[in-house]
Image (cartoon, rainbow, N blue to C red; front, side, top):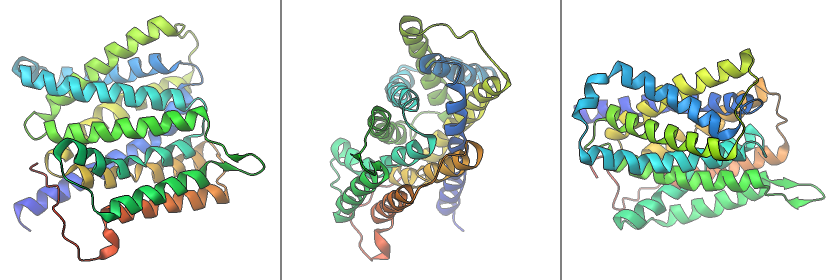
Length: 301
């Protein structure tokens, strides 16, 4: 196995670990929101991640350049807005439904990449968008009511778009910026912005229990510090679209964890919708095994 294949396998492995961790993050976030408002929860989790990573790699802080700050701030803004819409949205929808709706970002990544780098998506990207839209419609359908796309679902779809932008921007900057430095900057920015919004819009949390504390620690240490560092390292050695397909399995793990731990009801509509979304992902990333070789995005781009 040559060096490039080993790097790609390494990237895929740590990105899959990231997806599993984030799958559990849906449950931890829902539990945390029982006693902590969204922006305070974000402030706590990213503060923990920032302090933990900074204390371990404090020597790297002296090496930060203007270009590092520029990249970190851009990626951090996408991270903050994506997580804000996701965390607020989770108050109005279920973890299992949000897990799959968030996964639609994999279909959006090729189009954002086209917009930024002028590389046109192939026909399978259009098929993926169509199937994803149908899947979302089925997923949010309620008998007697029709399509019930509530506020939480809309915010989650916004999160998917912003997270797609986060993946594309991370893939761009991770090629030339130390993954640790990029992670520290985006964690710090997200924590500061979250605190500002929390102080303006939310009451200070006063009630805590063991579940809440565990949820905050899980989100801070695993979902934020470890998972985002792994994502940034992984994207240094693989493309944005490959990253998106691996991270999209987060939705599968999120649904599994929420059904098992939170006893969310897994309905037939949810199953059909999830399958359609999964097929849309396959259409975009595998092209159903057809031998078509369009101009591809590479890890070096």
